[in-house]
Image 1: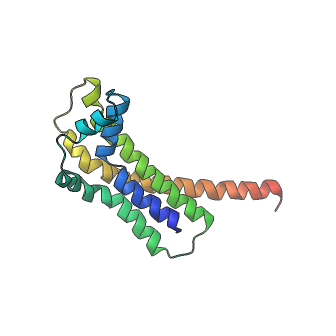
Image 2: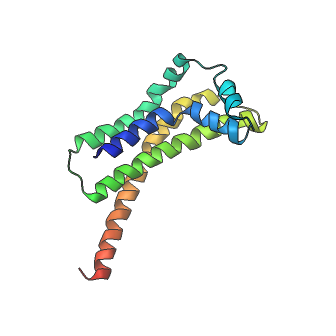
Image 3: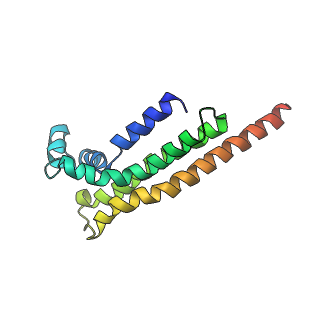
Length: 154
């Protein structure tokens, strides 16, 4: 894979997390301004807390990176599209999961007593979501290329 893929993969791993999504929620739903949202989000946070959930978030990205590295340096366009589809699906699933985890804090809903378990299960479910999205985007790319060839008469 090219450097863009590896850069975006590392960026998604570092940036797409429960703290970032909570910060976005504080601004969009909570009505906090920039400075107040930073103070609100990091009031009870610590670097140790960030690194407690990091190993679980690492699992789907590490599996995707391992698969990409295992397959070698030369990929067809369909394989590249499949890897990008899997990466985007993993990042979006993390955003969706952490949004659902943190949104009751800003909407006045009651937060579940087991909500902390989502920090473990969101990344674990992101594995199969990324796998299915990668397969789907790769197959869609392959089928669209074959249809395009038939239409062009090549």
